[in-house]
Image 1 (cartoon, rainbow over the protein chains, first blue to last red):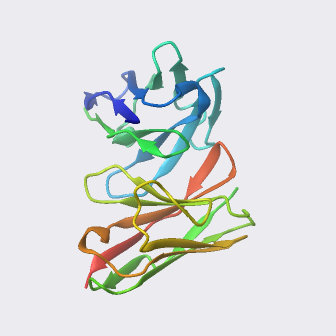
Image 2 (cartoon, helix red, strand yellow):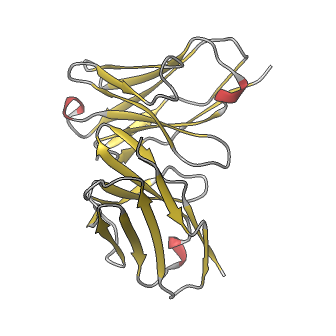
Image 3 (spheres, each protein chain N blue to C red):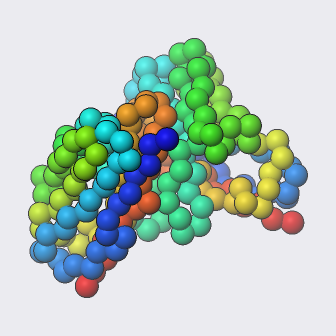
Length: 114
Length: 108
């Protein structure tokens, strides 16, 4: 069964750092770009960026360039999304998506609040 | 930048009725368009890829059409489980993608 399993919900304070993860299984991880998608409360889907695990080539949406870092470890079939300086406006659900948007993780809820 | 618009924003229909959702791209994207369904509290699910190909496990009451700038998702006869939000996504500049704003299909 193809699946992507994400790390659990997290609550942080403004200014803190955070790294969330997703582990893919059931398909060849290095054959497909893996994407991160943000969904703010009650809002639509926003593509943040994607990484190609085979060579770590990474592309970012202009809206998120410089705000987050996306990476992947092909030895563990795991992709990451990280922040170094969280803001309250980063509060959202974050989805990791594999296999050309065919396999979605369950989402990681990130809450940033003082 | 590829911008997608969807219409209508909300569609109120009864089970058994036909749903038609439109997605328009700001420039031609050939058939590099996908549709996703999202139910409350769930992750989105791929419904249609390449404008008209149903994803695995999607019932044949779902169909997609269009090319260039104008696309349509049709649900021929709504089942109770089809009431959800639908997003289109352009893949013309893969792996960069953009999503439409979404169309909510709710029960009349």
